[in-house]
Amino acid sequence: MPLRLKKFIGTILIIVLVSVYAIVATTIATLTLSTAPWYVHLLYFLLTGVIWILPAMLIIRWMAGPRKV
Image (cartoon, rainbow, N blue to C red; front, side):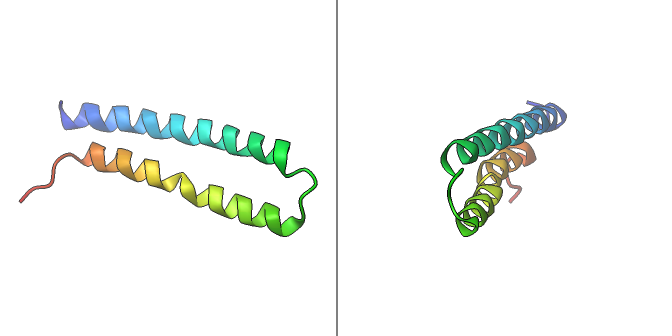
């Protein structure tokens, strides 16, 4: 697959990932954290704000192609 096509597909995948992840994380927070104290909210949003990076890194690694030796 040409590198340019991989980068285009990867960009679309990252946009979809971030959009869906934000909606799901916010929905879960709204449904489960409504009566929780502020520090639980802080911890939840800190964790969910960082966890999306893991799948994004995999997509970016795929976009970059194989390593050159």
